[in-house]
Length: 274
Length: 274
Image (cartoon, rainbow over all chains, first blue to last red; front, side, top):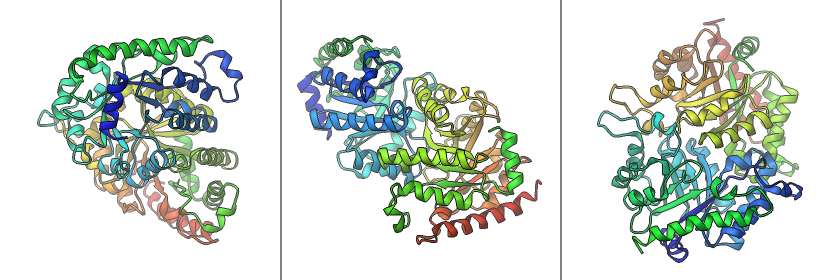
C-alpha cells in the first residue's frame, strides 16, 4: 500500500485508527478456550467487529511467539484472514526487529515475501545496514522506533549529543538518508505530548505510528493538535482499550463500541484537514 | 546456568566457542532437502559434530521465523534436542527483542518459561522497562546490545553526549543499575578491536557475547588481547564459518574441523588465564 492509498482510506473511513491485536490467551473470554484455535477465533471476531472503523491492524509478534508454534499459526491465519476479507487494511507486524544486514534480510523475507504484510516495526540501534534490507520491497514500509511511549524512552532516546541533538532526532535525521516518506514511518508514543512539535520539525510529511492512547494514558486530542499534518500523517493505535473492552460473550460487540468511540473522536479531529 | 558454571564449562572444554545456528534452507546441503524437517536435520548433525568443542549454541530467530510455522517447529526441536542431549550447553536465543514492559514480559515468557532457554539478546533503545521483565527469571540472562559488529554500529552507538560519553557507554553504565554480571552480558562485535579496552573500563567482570569472528572479519587474537578477563569473560560466536564450511554430505565433518580449528586457537588464548 502506498501513502496516497493510505490517506484515501483515512478520508473514506474518517478514521486513522489502528487496532492492536495484542492477543493474550490469558485475557480472552473463557468461552473461546474451547475453540480449536482460541487466539484466531478471538482475532477474527475482533476484526469482523471493527474493520469498518479502522484503517490498520497491528498484531504484536510477542504475543504470538509466547505461544510457540500454535501462536505462529494463529498469527499467520490472522494475517491471511485480513488480507482475504479486508484487503484495504494496512497490516503492521509489530516486531521491533533489527539485526546485521544478513539477518535483517531474513526478517524482511519473512514479513514481506512470505506473509505479504505491509509494514514492520524496526529498532534503530544497529544503524543503516540493519534497516536497509527492509527497504528493497516496493510499497512495503519500515516503521522505525523514534520516541517510544514507555517510561524507559527517557533512558537513551533523549540523550543529547555535543550539538544538543537528542538521539531520537538523530534517528529521524539520519534515517531520512535511507528512505523517503513513501517507505518510512516513525513510532512516536502518544504519551510524548508536545514533543510531537519537535518530531514534526524533522519529519513534517511522514506518517507516524502512535501507540500509547488508552491503557498507556496518551491523549488523542494532544496527538492531533501537535502531530497531524495535511495528509493526517497519523496512525493511532489502541490495543487493550479496544480488544479487552469486555470479557463476556459480548466481547466483540463491546470492542466495536470502544472502537466506534475512538473513531468518532477521530472524525472530529479530521475536520481540521478534510 | 550461572556465571561460575559457565566458567567451569569453559575450563573443562578449553573453549569459549558459541556455534551460531543461522540455518538457512537455501544454504544447507541439497541431500538434506529430502528430510521431513531439513532445518532440524541440519542442526542436529552440526550439534552432534561440535558439542564437545563449544560451550554455547546461538540460534538466530530470524532464520527460523523466515520459514513461518515450519521454522518455529525446527527452532523448538533444536532447543529441545540440545537441552536433552547436551544439557551443559548455554543456549542463546538471538532475537534482539525489546518492547514496552507489557510486551517484553510476553517475550520473556516465551523464551524462558516455555522454552527454558538460558539467555536472550535484547536491544536497549527502549530503556529500562523494556529490559527488566527478562530479569525476573533466576539464572537466566539478558545479553544487551552494546557495540555491535556491523558497519551501522557507527550510526548511533558511537554518538557522544555533552560529557563525551558515547551511547554504547551510556548503555553499559545505565544497564548496570538494572542487573549484575550474574544476569547481564553485552554484545560487543569482534570487529571493534581496541574498543574492547573501553568496554572493559565499564564492565571489567561481565561476560561479553562476541559475534563477528570469521565471515565478518573480526580477529580472535585481538578480541582476547583486549577483552579477556580472569573468568575468560568472552563467548565468541562463529556461524557461517563453521556451519557452512562444506556443502556436501561431509558438511558435519567439515563443520567439526572448522570448530576444532577455532577451539584450538581458543585453548592457546586461554593459557593466559588458566
